[in-house]
Image 1 (cartoon, protein in one colour):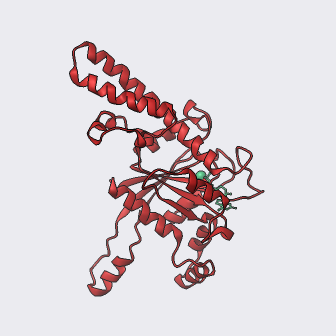
Image 2 (cartoon, rainbow, N blue to C red):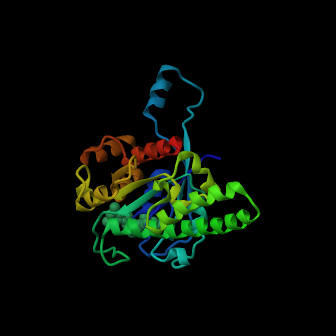
Image 3 (cartoon, rainbow, N blue to C red):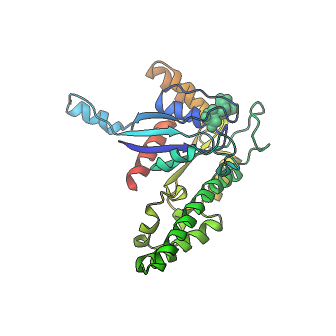
Length: 282
Ligand SMILES: Nc1nc2c(ncn2[C@@H]2O[C@H](COP(=O)(O)OP(=O)(O)O)[C@@H](O)[C@H]2O)c(=O)[nH]1
Ligand SMILES: [Mg+2]
């Protein structure tokens, strides 16, 4: 089984649009908030320009590129950790992911009302993070309860485990993600079995309109100021434009279209490479 990368984000931020550009499969995009409760899965090749170059030098029978499984996970919304929206079956999909791509709406569109009444990507990130933190807190608290029982049987390791688990508990209660908890590398084993959702490596995609390509906008600036976590990548992608490009038949047409926007390759290619790097680093 390949590496799994999950696409998350609030309703209508462009997850499925982005998924379609990445995977070239056609899943339904719609503006109905809880349109789908099933995750879309696609296997994508990691575009590597070096592979093509190598092929020229030394033709091989088959060009083998790396692959990543990409999963478009709908359903996350305010209150979804309590079963609102489509319920929380999607949590299993997030739990199975090795890394996450968090898509945020950074475009205005009067025809596409935002579920919260306004476009505010920083609020949206906090909304999603909070839902995941609530779930993680549940997992940590359950394990603390289990360890407390073990301590009564004289288990010494359980005592150490509880100390570490309490650090995570406090961190999550302060609305922080598990991956930033002040815990030593060797102590992380005490939560490894929990597959904490906010422990997973994440990168952000700001879904922008075409006029913001290459320069960003006030929304993307706000996201960049809000995400202070070290090593977390933030990419601007105009998903709607990328999906138009993906529809074109010939490479020439695609290149022409890209050049009109000052791009040298589809931004989703960059995204796929970044996602692959993120998966391999962890
Ligand atoms: N204006 C604009 N609309 C977009 C963009 N990306 C997606 N949409 C539209 O937003 C709606 C929801 O997109 P979808 O990908 O289904 O969002 P999801 O709920 O996150 O999967 C669809 O009608 C898309 O056509 C964008 O960059 N700009
Ligand atoms: Mg969708």
